[in-house]
Image (cartoon, rainbow, N blue to C red; front, side, top):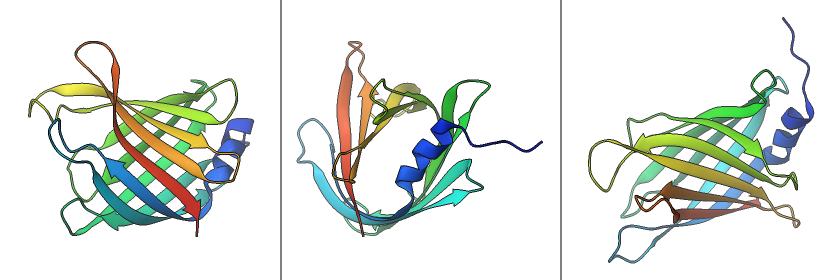
Length: 159
């Protein structure tokens, strides 16, 4: 079985290359946001997948190492992937779609409820391709009130 790249696979090519990032993460209701910097290298795996390897500062010090995979499953008509990081034992598993503009990929996932310390919550990671060639990653969590709450934003520029 040899898969042929679809338009969605070609969309992922916009992520290829080496990037620097500046991120701001919400640390809690009564705390100042944390600001960090990082670097990421994104490569293609056979034209069907991308693999992004990142390193960055941890809030409060130390280094974080992250690995993102993304591809497209034509049978499900969904982008699929995963994310792991050296700071946690949870593997985030993604499924998502592009918006009508073809610039915004919304990835749905479920992960730990960090506020309660147990159970799970729904999250979204949203990748936006900007007109100037940069990109943005925004993360949000579904609140108990049914509204999405912003928790993190990272701005990426080509190195």
